[in-house]
Image 1 (tube, rainbow, N blue to C red):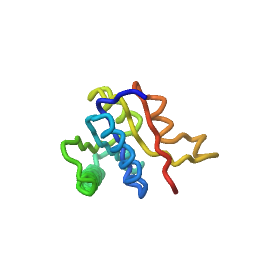
Image 2 (image 1 turned 60 degrees about the vertical axis):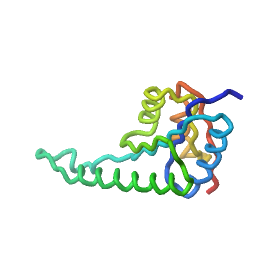
Image 3 (image 1 turned 135 degrees about the horizontal axis):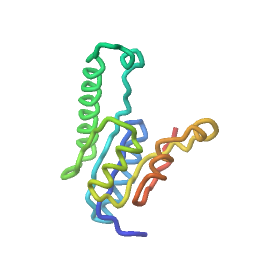
Length: 147
């Protein structure tokens, strides 16, 4: 197994996130690796806002509230796991793009994220884990999440 220096843990705040985080933290300790936690808020304004001729700022307020809520949850998660000296990031966008950009900007050499292991229609439509797997310039470890 490779030695990792900087591990990015992609967190989705699902009930299984603690399981993913615990496994990733064990790996980080074994490698004495630096840790970054990243949550990506996927948010698009409602379609009726996009067609308005006047700029409607309600969706900007909603976006700010969503970011604040996610940052609070990230702080709670870090506190619950007694994490110190870790980077905590919350971004808005598409997980594949935000995670790829973070990895490139911060020279991460491993991405850890949970995978629900869905089949059928969900598999055909693509999952976040699958999209990230094929976009990364580094190793990716998916942790099977129990449903």
